[in-house]
Image 1 (spheres, rainbow, N blue to C red):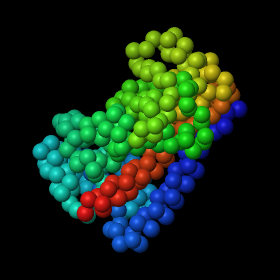
Image 2 (image 1 turned 135 degrees about the vertical axis):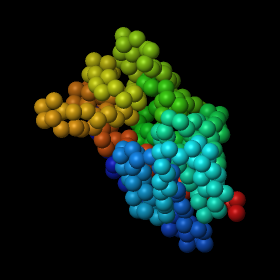
Image 3 (image 1 turned 135 degrees about the horizontal axis):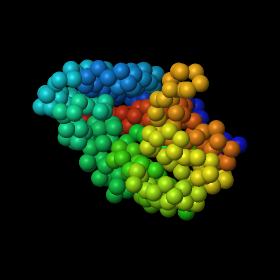
Length: 300
């Protein structure tokens, strides 16, 4: 049976480390770090995500607030709000909860956030620096995946990995951080990476996965990764999250991309859903906010 990688426990450990570091930072005379979230519309899931992030901010010593904006706000009005926060010296981190309404250009919004306050790491500036192995604010979910492997002593150097999913906010950054040179600023993992996606034929996906020492899946397709696809002893990281209805109980539940109960019988390590990568995403957002605050304090 696989060792379960407890994302909640690791996230709590990171949160405590951040809390202590912020306490020392403030004692040196620095301002308490501040995070502002922008929530456009009233999507219930987005509201829950933002509330969870703000609660975590409080526990680690980061002050926070949420700017709730109407769904019919114009793109220009939203960009004006972002510009105001960019120029507010009391704001260290800005996150725009995605998705935004369809009439707003998501890429334009992400690029409007000042790079030094872009705690989501979605701007072309931060993505570009990450791809060049340069220090940057790295997207929280990919950073959380890497940190989970590091803290669970998953051997990566020279290993083979499959990343399933090529989204620009999750799959692509994970692949970059896995394969790049660990001697450079991003401290990447020196893995040989194969990227699979929706157009990878099922037989080919199964072939690549069966040879992988590490499988990271981020597709939102429940049950995509089965026991037969996993090499014995492999590390399986499940980033996918989907709400489905349990046919036996009629109740809804969250599941990942991996057939957890079956795959855990052959894998060496596996993350659960929920309780795996999710808590790490929030923890690394706090990490990025504190990193931004330290950078801005030096600028001042």
